Length: 193
Image 1: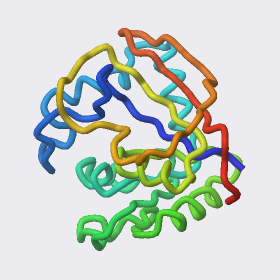
Image 2: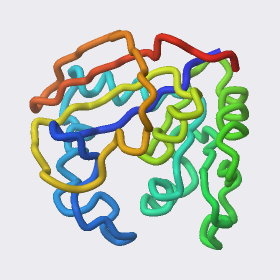
Image 3: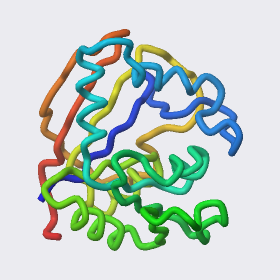
Image 4: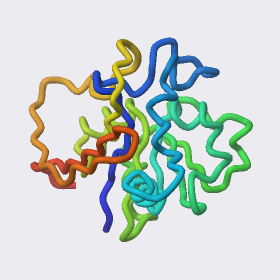
């Protein structure tokens, strides 16, 4: 079985979105800078990283990530199933998206996504989803795409985690084009699933 892996672009000061996030401004002011590396003009490290997360077997995202992205038109990549964590019902515009599953239950989402992905990893998106998954001990690995910019304000990735100490093992540090550094970690102590 594959791993559940959070892939997130983050500013050097810990933000995954700039200030003034709205439905129309999903990445906040200046937040698009965090994702410029995703569109490399030619091969290299950044291209390999994109290829890695685009070869995952399922996706888990929060509503705040899924809906501003217009649900990726129902296909994040290769038709893999998508689980959306939400307390709200599926919006009308997403009703025809057969690969999309809305649920409030994070454990159900992770269990079903892992099952659907088989031997492939599950791509996890979103700060709130990450925070909930870490608190529930459901996340296996974290890959941070560290961008050399200070946003100064916005949405932080690692808020709301409580005071529990969590150790991680560094798996990889890769230097990408445009100054981005890709950092991959695995949680060391795992509770029984």
